[in-house]
Length: 118
Image (cartoon, rainbow, N blue to C red):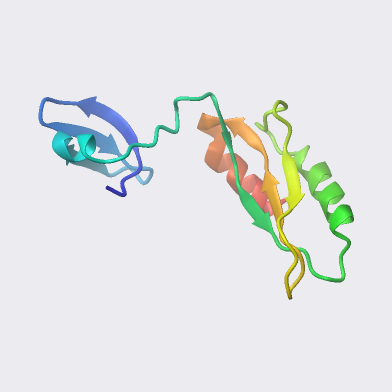
């Protein structure tokens, strides 16, 4: 289906969904029943997944420590589970890090943007 949004109303034949950019979309229930659904609000917390590139000249352990300190200054981060920062792999340009803080579902995009800036 490829549609993301908040369900506003479930009718007999169609479901009204508001997309993140505030477009109300009506989807036939037959299409909803025949497809896979992702419910982003079922759990109170979500994991933010970001990849941070680290150049060869930088020590990855130092980068992990620095990112960990910066994450502590981001509002609305969940304390439990703690953010996860790990080396994904080593490649020709360096080693990308997986930066995975958790936050309340309602703060996801704010935390995502703040983490990118940090």
